[in-house]
Image (cartoon, rainbow over all chains, first blue to last red; front, side):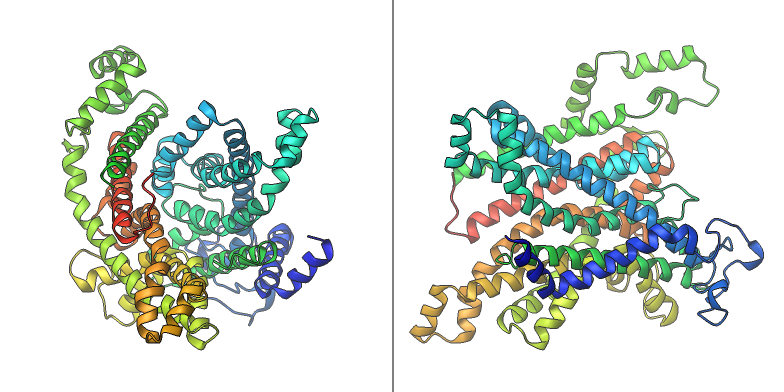
Length: 284
Length: 306
């Protein structure tokens, strides 16, 4: 596909445009949050605990979205918290894609025993519900952001490996691959210069759809106290902290809940848009 | 077909054994000795050693696994010191509540998704189609945790229509089940819609129109039967996500199922119970998928048994 054609399709896809604008907006807020957040997100101010949202009445220095049970400014925590969610989802999606792709290429290209081992392992892996596995592993290992990232990588490599493998097996016997073999290319070279570019489109589509899911899983685990440890302002932790105050100070939960929804929606829009742009036939 | 089922069954046994190895290894990750966890804080090194020998922890790992798996085959999933009960009793006491919640949730998901997906697919570009797509996108993007809490806020706290927490009949199950159902409903709506759109463009559907068969019977007898097949597979595969979601949802609504038990077990650092729960949940998931595959052979006559 030429660059021009790609550009044309991007502009034509509403999903892509809305998703891209929102995602870029979220990334900018996350990157700038230490400087633009109105208050210190971890500064305790017990005199001001559970203050109702001021809205825009008091300007930027008021508590626009109110304060939490420790008197911390919710808007500031949301902004800084977006860094946590984004960091985790980017690290997880990119690492799983790399690991899954490598395993998929190896499995599909070599076949035989290696293929059997990798694919049977993946069968076992997908038989354990990912969130339950993540809960169990986090419980045993103890909660830290590093452990959380490792667990999420561990539970999500399979789909990449499977998609890549089936593509590789299809491509492996095509004439141009045979031609490369005849020309004396090494296996490694063939895998990376001939096969990888062919599965890249599919990979990007899957990756773009994984961001939202990863953010949701992370927030669920953090909600259960098995994800990002306090006092880091993670959205899941914020929701968990506000639970007791659901009836009296619902803003404590609604603010991070809405933020979570907007972020996931943005990535899902982008994911659908990327699929429309790269693979217009598949409208699933 | 009989051979296919036999083959599928042996595969299931292989997977379950693999899962048991993985859950067994999970406990090996525990920092410190499991023996120390069982003793009081003041236990000496010698006491820990003695307990380890008593528990068989000094044996090679393969021997330990052999002991574990032969126990599992006899229904022995370990013993919980905290509850003073066998793990299997604890788990099977809680399993019906989780089953109840997930089945009601599945029914809610199907009640929402099947009509919405079909109508959206048939009346492509209509208002209902647009609504269905918005629903599908929102449903996939909202966190079950947030949805559950919002339900409690609106229907229990503000309106007072439903009890906020607890276990019981329809009024208790409706909120947690709907919160749990939303993602699955969104996914099925989406799949069914695109499946209907694709099938309705097939030549054989156009041929049935030419034969003068009524539109309604074309949709229900010919198109739906084809469009619903991938949905059945997805439901099977999503049961895993569903069970995972149930763990979180139960925690929000104080539902006395496996999920609440898991969180309690984690709080008590009763890792052998966590391990057994993981094994049982995975086994449920694997068996549901075995069932789905068998149903498939009945529903889809084109099924290739090789």
